[in-house]
Length: 130
Image (cartoon, rainbow, N blue to C red; front, side, top):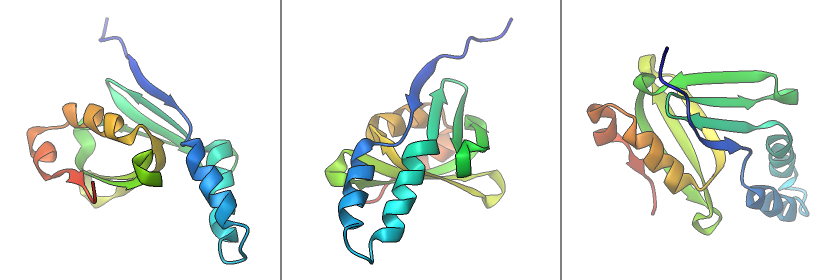
């Protein structure tokens, strides 16, 4: 019998991302950003547990990526929406990257993920703009 998987966070992107991008969408230039935010709001879901991080997204939520913490080499966060939500980029083994857009409570999520990383990954990870 293995270790039970405990969920830290499960849900979609921060609602503020959608509201902000809808307001920007009132201009023709902001329309692509609004479409992206609507698609994220409809089909992007995060599931962060003590064992892995899962991201479901893409058109109709058909794409799923699972990452175990030992695969993560670096995390960089960028606050958005006056710090209410943020974006994260996870650099994985082999150099591939996984973007997490509009993560609610991103500082708490970052701290939780950071606790599960290797010491080397913890040392090189951080935030751009506090």
